[in-house]
Amino acid sequence: MFASTSISAAANVSLLLSVMISLLIYHSVFVGVAFTQFQLFSPHIDRQPSTTLKLSSAPNDELTESKSWRRHALEQLWEERAKMGRTPVFPFKYTGNPRVTLLFKNETATSTGSLKHRYAWALMTWALLEGHVKQGTHVYEASSGNTAASLAFMCRLIGVPFTAIVPDTLEDVKKEHIEHYGGQIVKVPIAERLVKARELADKSNGFFMNQFGNAFLAEEFHESGNYEKQSANMFHEIVTQLNESRLAIPDYFVHAAGTGGTITSIGRYIKKYNLDTQVVFADTQFSVYYDYVLHNRFANQSGSHLWVEPGMAGIGFGPMGPAKKGQTTSLDPAVIDRVLKIPDCASTAAMKVLLENGVSGGTSSGVNLVAALHIGANLSSPRPVTIATILGDPSSYYQTSYLNRDWIAQRFARHGGLEAYYCWISVLREALDNGKDPLQLGRRCPTGNV
Ligand SMILES: Cc1ncc(COP(=O)(O)O)c(C=O)c1O
Ligand SMILES: *[C@@H]1O[C@H](CO)[C@@H](O)[C@H](O)[C@H]1NC(C)=O
Ligand SMILES: *[C@@H]1O[C@H](CO)[C@@H](O)[C@H](O)[C@H]1NC(C)=O
Ligand SMILES: *[C@@H]1O[C@H](CO)[C@@H](O)[C@H](O)[C@H]1NC(C)=O
Ligand SMILES: *[C@@H]1O[C@H](CO)[C@@H](O)[C@H](O)[C@H]1NC(C)=O
Image 1 (cartoon, helix red, strand yellow):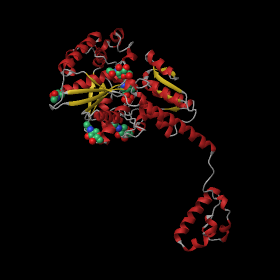
Image 2 (cartoon, rainbow, N blue to C red):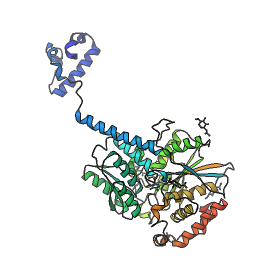
Image 3 (cartoon, rainbow, N blue to C red):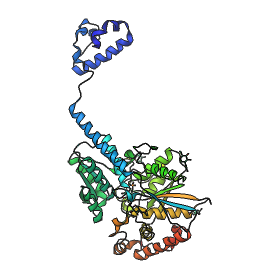
Image 4 (tube, rainbow, N blue to C red):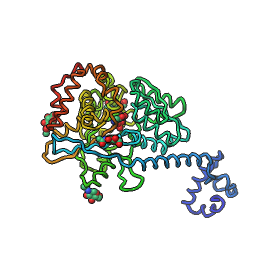
C-alpha cells in the first residue's frame, strides 16, 4: 500500500524517501530480490503487489493457545497469593534484655510450611513470564527439601510435572512432604545436586529452575500498598504488619542464607526504600559466604575443602563449588550491612532452646536466634530496638536429625559431640535470662577438633 500510493511524493521528500529505502531493503531481504538504486526510481516498483509486504498477520493459533495457558497459570498463582495472606509475626520472650523486642516472622504458617512458599511462588511466576515454563514443561529443582515441597505445590497448582534433586541425607519427613504435593525425588550426594538437576532437565527438554542462581532474578522487592495483588516480598509484609500495629520498622533484620535469595530480596527492599534497618547476615560455621560477602572470595574458587559435616541443613554455602552470583548463588553482598558466623553446634542447641520456649523452628531458626541474641547483647546505644528475624521451617522436620540426641552425638562428634551441645544449651538459656552475648558465653564450650 505504501509503495503504490506515495511513490511520486516520496521522490520529492527526502524523509519519506529514506523510509521508502528502508522498506525496500526490508522487502528485498525478505523476498530475496536484490533491488538496486536504479530500480528504486523505476516505475516498476509502483506495481509491486502490496501483498508481498506483510506488515501484519492473522493471530497464530499456537501462540494464542500458549498465551492463554499462561494466563490461566498466572491466575492460579494470583489466587494462591491471595490465599497466602500474610504470615504472622510474633514476639519472642527475651526477658533478659528488656530493651530488645525480638520478632519472628512465622513462615511455618504457609501452606507448604516454610519460607520457601513465597519464594517458590516468585520463582514460578518468573519462569512463566520468561517463557521457561510452558504447558507440559517438566520442572526440575535442586533443593534441600523445602523449596522442593513448595515448588511441587506450585507445579501441581498450574499442572506441570516436577522432580526434586535432593541430598541423599534428606530426612524422610521432607521426602514425604515433597511426594505429598506430587513431586518426584532423585537423591544424589549434596555437592552434585545442581549438575544432576541441569542434566536431567536437558535430557528431557524440561526446565531447571535453579533457585541458587535465579532467585536473584525472580524475587521481587516492591512495596505494593494495599493493592490486592500484593507484593510477595517478606519485608513488605513485615513493614505493613508492624505499621498496622502502630509499631516502627525493625532496627535490625537478621537471617541466615542458603541460596541467599530470601535475605537478598529483603536487603534489596530495605536499601531501595532507604529504610533505617541494618541487614545482618548470619552465616553457618563452615560456609564460604562470610568471606564471599566480606572479601569477595570464593567466587572463582571452591571452598568445598573447608566444609565440615553435617552443616546446617538448607543453609550455608559449602560443598557446591564456587559461589557465582546469578549462577550458583543469589546472595548479593551489596545489600548486606553486617556478617556474623554462628557455630553449628550453637545453632543446633538453639533449635532445642526455641522448643523449650514454645517455638517450633528448624535449622535456620536456630542460627537466627543465636545471631539475634548476639546483636541484642552487643548494642552500642541505650535506646530500645526491634530485631526482626524468620522462623523458616518447623522443628518437626528435624526430629530424626538436629533434634535427635544420637544423631547429634554421632554427626557432631568432631564438634565436641553431646558435651558441646549441652554446653551451648546452657549458654543460650543463660543469654535469654541475662541478656548477655551467647557467642562470648560460648567460649566456655568445647569446640572439638574442627
Ligand atoms: C529452613 C530454611 N531456612 C533458610 C533457607 C535459606 O533460604 P535462602 O535459600 O533464601 O537463602 C532454607 C533453604 O532451603 C531453608 O530450607
Ligand atoms: C507458627 O505458625 C504455626 C502454623 O500456623 C503455628 O502452629 C505455630 O504455633 C506458630 N508458632 C508460634 C510460635 O506462634
Ligand atoms: C504507618 O504508615 C502511615 C502511612 O504511610 C504513616 O503515616 C505512619 O507514620 C506509619 N506508622 C508508623 C508507626 O511507622
Ligand atoms: C573471577 O574471574 C574473572 C575472570 O576469570 C575475573 O574477571 C574476576 O575478577 C575474578 N573474580 C575474583 C573475585 O577473583
Ligand atoms: C560487640 O562484640 C564485639 C566482639 O564480639 C566486641 O569486641 C565489642 O566490644 C562489642 N560491642 C559492644 C557495644 O558491646
